Image 1 (cartoon, one colour):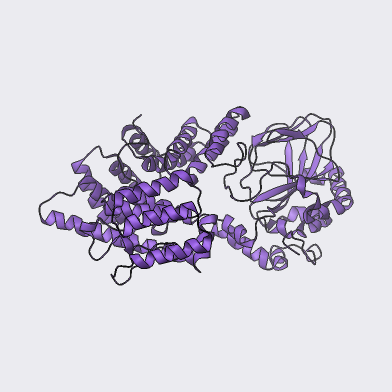
Image 2: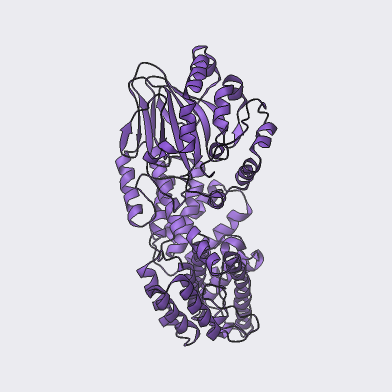
Length: 582
């Protein structure tokens, strides 16, 4: 396998302009009227030159002021030294060395987006458009994180939006400058080098100039038929035009197995292949192998491509769980990710990881949460109604078998109350008082990445180890009927439930359930928002537009939304309870 994370091939970017992110410009000899100090990043120590005048001295004033506002540190001083080497001294190799030193000292620094952008500017001035493009992509990826956005917003109002808009403009300018340089060389009967051709093909494709990208890539392949990056871009452009097929998977496999790729190329290529392989079979070894390779290549980068690496390790771990591999094997993989700063805990493996919030498999601090007190206060009402419906056979009749293939023995049924923001008629008709009590929890109604339900488990049931989709939610379990022999393990610890008491878990941790008793186990489950997520961070965690719209509607007027869903007015509570309330 020659798809090593170390060979000199540039990044492919099969992304829209907003995701392509940014590039600074062509090398000095190819860019008219621009200079290293002409790059953007207002308020983050990066200059904006709109009139062609040298703005480097003003840049250092801005950088010094920014350092004063945020507290002068050793890293701030080193950053200014690197900026001076870049903009005043034009010593681009030295500037790159300084920015690399900052990355080695603290790759999690909240100004790392600025560092990566400066490095990209220096690389572009040296003519290495491919590596520059990767650095600029990293800069915007880092700026788009919660700490990165906070830093930009502290430095200037709408700082992130300005940063993003200006970098998009730079992509277009760089593409035009590189394109002009190629035309100039062709006019002189001089063949452009492979790096220039491929950098320009990437940029052209990123800004929607597909014909130009194909033209440049074809020219490159005639020069170097074994150019891994060009072969990869060729496949990726075809994937963008048609529905994926087994032939596409075969071609992409050939690229990653037979051509040398740089780490960023390899990480993105393996990630794309993993998606295609998993579309064929979610538990295949090919799917697992592709995600593991994605993880390995993304972690070989400096700084580590955290988003891709985290996606790789989380998906690989969850496939291993689906294959029913030993949890200890999954833990070892998770431990590697923890050492690299990708995960909080080895067995906390949600598909959507929200960073910067507290994490614990068992929330011992939940006993005074409003949601917990509300449910426990109404336990007698809930228990009476649920058990009456169960004894009549109505709950068993209306509850459905779980649909995620998590149970590997016995029977596990669920009567959904709310699912992803949608109230369920069967529940409100059968359990109107219980539904009204649950609907009073605003942090449950608006939790559009989860729901609430009555969970019924027959003796002999085994639920395999698995994880929840996000750590933005926490899961309340309240015991309604708990016989001996029913257990739940979350992370390393095994417990049982207590009737009338709430147990709160973070189901983004690996967890499993088994029931060795003689009677049915009944638990009320309610998903709520993590209490440390304010409204802004909740919105940030919702990446799917329809889900975000559902959240906003429910937040604005829950009564109206529930009425529109057909919930009887008599069931809808008069007031709603939230941990966000004073």
